[in-house]
Structures are given as structure tokens and as C-alpha cells.
Image 1 (cartoon, rainbow, N blue to C red):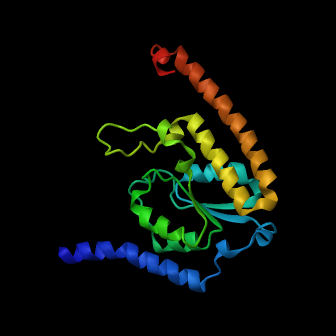
Image 2 (image 1 turned 90 degrees about the vertical axis):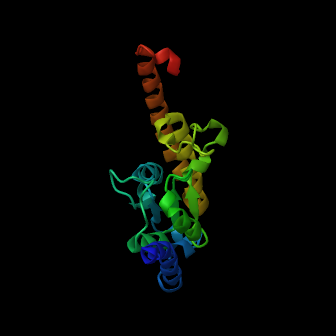
Length: 205
């Protein structure tokens, strides 16, 4: 049994080694300079699908988005595979959630940040605005997409990250983000209106 535990601990290290080899041998998109990116779609890899959806709204035709986690996958338990490492290594930019949501991928994402521009969208939210459940050892509740207003900050964060990587199309990303933010603001207003109409709604808002 001790051997099995040792093998389990080796897996992340082997994946990181694979990433280093890929960095040295494969055509890694993140090395492209802004002038090259301006002439082609930006390759984006995300962890969760909900982040991929936001990137598509902001990036439009300028991005090619790959989500590592499909529908119904628990991000808390997901472990990176060799194919995931290849996709991450060939990305121009990586978006992940952060706030300990992708706990099993933390080491991989941290190492990838050395080679590929990597952004944790949870950083868009002020820690003071997060919920810290009792018994969570000081860790916040990472499910910020349940609050539309918090997720709107994530959308703006994504727009600025894309503009930083591909400045030639910064205005395009920001315009798309503004349009999407208006949709989200309408959604937030509708949700709050419906909650107020409910018997306990006044307590929620």
C-alpha cells in the first residue's frame, strides 16, 4: 500500500516534467508576441466550462477556447491528465477559477504560470466580498458565479487579461464585455425582483 501512495504522489511531478518537455519541444503558443497574436485567434484554455463561456462572450471571434472540464465534472476533484498538460502548454493564455476550486490541479496551474500567462478569475473579487463558511479553515466559498454581481467582475477581469495579451484588439474585448455586462445586469435585476416577490425575499436582498 505504501508503494501505491508513493506512485500517487509521483503523478503530479511526472505531469510537470511532461510540461517542461513540451515547453522545450512543442510549438508553445504563449511565446507569440502581440503582433503575431493580432494576426490569428488567441488560444485560450480554461478549467471549468463556466469560465469558457465567459471567455467566449468576451473574446468572440478572436478566441479559440478549450475547457478541460466537461459538464457535470466536479472541479474540486478533477485531476489533470497528460492531454490536459499538452493543451495548457500550447495555450496563449490560461484562465482558471482559483479560490481553491481546482484543488487537485493547484500544483499544475502554479507551474504552468511560469511559462504561459495564467489568470485566476477569482482574483477579480475583493476578499472582503467573499463568504467564509464556518469550519472552512478561513477559506472562502469559491462558488462566486451564484452571485451575478460578483461574476460581472470576473467578466471585466477576463476582458482586461485578453487585452493585456492581445492589445491590438483590446477595444474589441472591452466592447464585448460591456455588452455582456449589460445582459448580466438585466439578469441580476430580474433575479432580485423575483426573490423580493417570494415570501422570504425581503430577507435575502
